[in-house]
Length: 46
Image 1 (cartoon, rainbow, N blue to C red):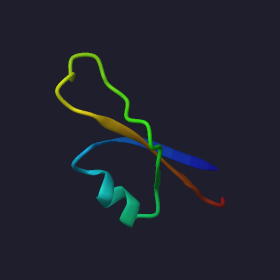
Image 2: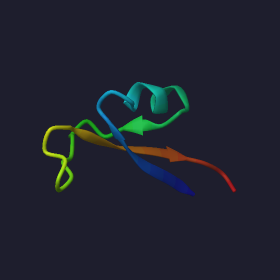
Image 3: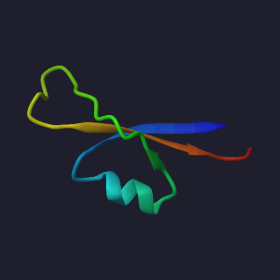
């Protein structure tokens, strides 16, 4: 199973400590042009 979430630029190191991998390309969200976000993914076994 693939878990995913978005993390703002200042928070992605925390998610990396939890075992998530960061997509290297930042994304933007409508209405939040002042921040960059990253797609974080982690594969887990069920």
